[in-house]
Length: 100
Image (tube, rainbow, N blue to C red; front, side, top):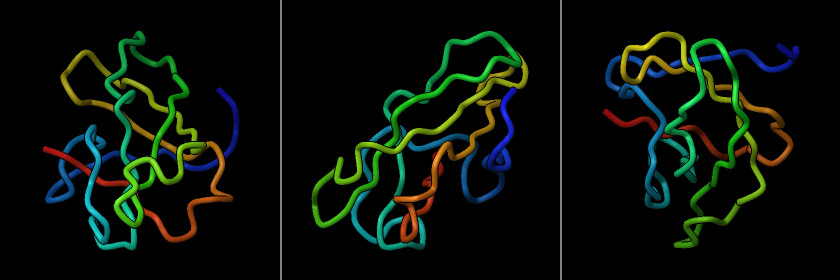
């Protein structure tokens, strides 16, 4: 596993996984929300997978479409998934949006 940004998971009122549909502007307590329609991973437990994520901004649902994130399943339980940025150079005003 490569070094880099810390892993995180969604819990509590944030939901239990990354949003898989576009979110409106100013969602999730930020100017724009990060979401991914690829983050429903099928990889084995403990194997990270790099997927595309998007930032919604100004009614453009894939405004920032070059964002890559790592996603990893922690167990066979549904939604037991952790996430991390691969590169944060373009994410200064965006946050991940969770979903229940």
